[in-house]
Image 1 (tube, chains in turn red, blue, cyan, brown):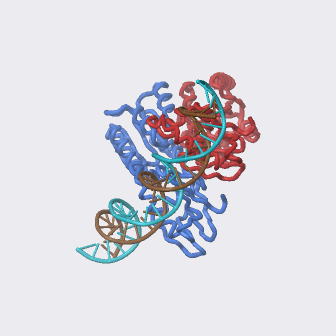
Image 2: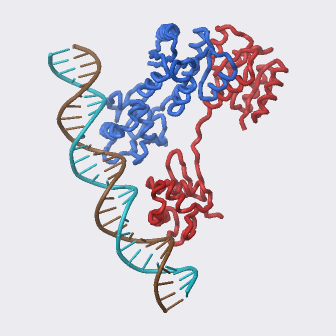
Length: 226
Length: 226
DNA sequence: ACGCGTCTTGACGCGATCTTGACGCGCCGC
DNA sequence: GCGGCGCGTCAAGATCGCGTCAAGACGCGT
C-alpha cells in the first residue's frame, strides 16, 4: 500500500485530496500543521508528502528543510504563491515538484505518480522454492545458503520452472522458452539438462524430490515441502 | 561537466536556453527536431533533457516514449499546451516535470536542478580489497600505499562497477554508460579493458579476486565489505 | 609537425558450455 | 515374456565466449 502524507491547513483541500487519492488506492494521512507533519514523519515515513507552504505554525519551507535533514522522501509542494522566487526556493530546498493552487486534481495525481515512480527502487525479484533461492536480477542461485553455479542454459530452465510455481511445464513450452520455437522437438536437450540440474540441485540425483518428471508431458519444480 | 540536451523547434528559445544554461556552467547541446534528439541520445546520454512537445517531425510524446524505451535520463517537458490532459499524458509517459510556456527562466533552472539532484548517482563508496584502495570520488587508486594510474576509460568502468556494490553489471549497461548507447555490442572493449584493469589492480591477474566475470552476462566488482 | 599516452581493432589460444550420438533401464501394452 | 517408447546417463566433438597480446589509429599538448 502506498502511503501519502498530506499537509495543509485548509480542511476543504485536505478532504478533497483525501477523497481523490483514496479513490486511487492510496492510503492517506492528513495533518493540518507543520509540527504534526514532522511528528507523523517521525513515526512513519510515507511514500510521498504533499506539503502546503502556508501553514499556521511553522513556515512550509522550514518544514521542508527539517524533512530534508533526515529523509529523501519525495515532497510535492502545494502553494498559493505563484512567484518564481518561491518556487525556486522550495525546489532548491529539496522539493521534488511545486504545484500552484488552484491545481487540477488530475495533474497533481500525475505529478505524484511521477514522484513515486522516480523514487521506486526497482526491487530485485527473488524466487524461492524450498531452500533454493533464485535472485533473478543478480543471476545468482543459492541452495541452503550455498551458492550454486548454473550455466546460462541451466539458469533459463530453472527460471521457467520456478515461475510456474510447482505447476507442470510442458516440454514444448520449456524448449520454446529456452532454445526457441524451432527447437520444439529436441526433447533430448531436456533430458541432458535436467540430469545436470539434478546433479547440482538434488541431494540424491537418482531420486529427485524437486525436479520432477511427468513422463510424456514435461517437468515441474516442487519445493521439497509440498 | 553536466550535459543538457535541449530540444525545441523555436530557434529563439533554443538560443535563450543555451545562453542561460551555459552561464550556469552547463554544457548545452541544442537540436531542433525529434529525430536529431534521438540520434544525439544514441551517441551520448546527457544528464538531463529539455523536450518541447511541439516538434516539426515527430510528436514530442513519441520522442519521450522512445527515450523511455532505453533510458532513465531525466526529461523536463516544455510545452505551450496548458491542458491538464497533456500534462498527465507526458508525465505518465515518464516525463520528470512539465513546464508550460512561457516559463520563467529561474523556475526552469530550479526544476532542472531538482531533476539533476534526484538523478544524482549515489556516491560510490571507497572500495578496498586487501591492500588496494579505490577512491572513486577522488579518482585515486593506491596499492599498498603506492599510487596506481588509471586512464579515463578505466576509471569510468571502475566507477560503474563500484556503484553496483558487488551486484552484477550487464555488458550492455557497462558499454552504454562508458562508451554510449551505440557501443552496446562492442563486448570486445570490455575484454580488453577488464584485462588491463586486472593487470593494474589484481595481485594475480589470471585469477581475479575483485573483477569477476559472469560469462555471457557481465562483470561485478567485489570488495572486502561484501 | 612531433611524441606521448590512450584508444581501437584484429588474431589467436583456451576453457567452459553446448550439441550430438550411443546405450541401458523401466514401464506399459500385448 | 517381449518389444516399443520414453527417460536417464555418459562422453566426445563442436562451438562459444573470454583473456591475451600487439599493431596501428587517434588525440592532445608542446
